[in-house]
Image 1 (cartoon, rainbow, N blue to C red):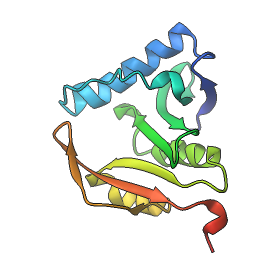
Image 2 (image 1 turned 60 degrees about the vertical axis):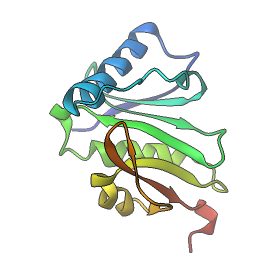
Image 3 (image 1 turned 90 degrees about the vertical axis):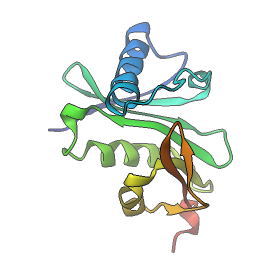
Length: 148
């Protein structure tokens, strides 16, 4: 099955879409990963939001900060019931397609997903660290015009 995608700015998000995003992020990052953390970080207003729907249900999401240097991809999430369908790879490819050719993309990856992100072209860029009790590693993908 494929997803239908929406790319929206903060101003374009409806209240219903924002609610769906926050529910999905809480289901995965807070409940499933058993991690109490401050998801509402006052950054959503600055992001481009990618929403992946199956029928009317939001099942994949990420936010991208195109104005930052490097560009930052974050809050990448796929509903537990929809994993193993390639939706994580799909949302990441959608994110990477937004990155200008002359800009580097950065992600703060959960360490257990290192190989997944490497398969997309990311490389670890510094030492790992704990974020909210979960091991993370900084990863970057070089500008598209720098790839041979």
